[in-house]
Picture 1 (tube, rainbow, N blue to C red):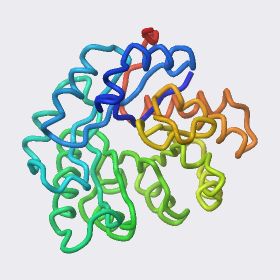
Picture 2: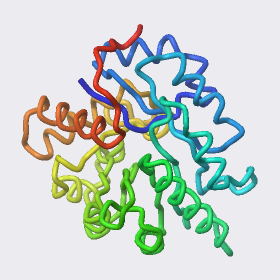
Picture 3: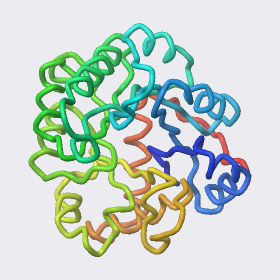
Picture 4: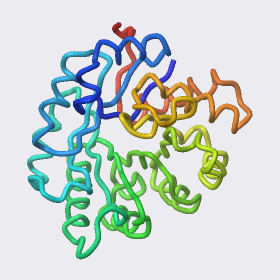
Length: 266
């Protein structure tokens, strides 16, 4: 079985197709998915999906790309994370690719999320793009990793260097690969994925974005995460069943989700 560790099925283009989304998950043996929050106004939709479907989990957080949105406080994040289906804080982090200028507000927002993670003992979902040095620095300064008393988390949709991956792993973080790793142009990322130990890997879709080969160019969805696992198995020259089992184990271990016998609904 497979688990999509990062998706946005509350987004309108996927939410409108929920029966089809769930059916594709079931047919592709994707047993669970984590629906990730990007802002507070839409958080109720994220939580509602997790409450309705036993095999869907959720996070609470505000994405670094969302500039004109209510700013979260530590207390807010702590309070909103109390529901048992909320298993993580984020997504959070830094993005210097899409936004320019004085981004101190982005760095402060990141710190707020790390502090909420330390209080709640729920792992972080970290987004970093063109900002890896500051991302790692703030993680270290705020004690995000297990090496400094935090609960660590996952570097989602990873596209950075092996050195960044190793720095995150040293703090207890997992590295999550999306459909990008299947792209022919992603040679450097494929080298990173080959080097990262399977015991530290998660798989994700980041749907509705970044559909993996053979669906590249189409709308992505959680059921397609199996193709990421298939690519990693070939890349690492290990059985697909090994990738499926290890990434599933990693998900349950990181997000402290109790294993169950929930079957994917169709």
